[in-house]
Length: 160
Image (cartoon, rainbow, N blue to C red):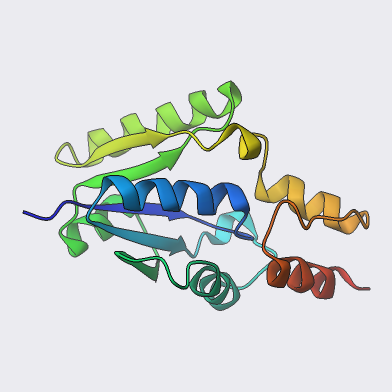
């Protein structure tokens, strides 16, 4: 029986840290669904369609992987997909409290769905999309943090 997992996130924008986790997940699970959340409450810089397209481009060539978008509770989405494993990334200890809260809330909402935590390579453990956006705004070279095409899109978005 094939084992599938969902890696949900806003991906605003996708970073090498996200891609590292996606690659690790594809080595553990038979099928990985990367689920781009609408997440209007976060006020993303990129539209849902732009984030979806960037993930499609960044994961091109990875096997056993599907990129989709969703709206609403991730546990509801997981049930509709017939998947009972959620993947969440833990970069630093500071992520733990939020991710732990989210995992326990999801467990209360859907006890049949498990959360698996993955840690990125230490090369990417400090990366966050928020940090990348702030750094790009200040004109820094972000080529070691995101794929080249994402860096260009950030540069275009941040132009006055």
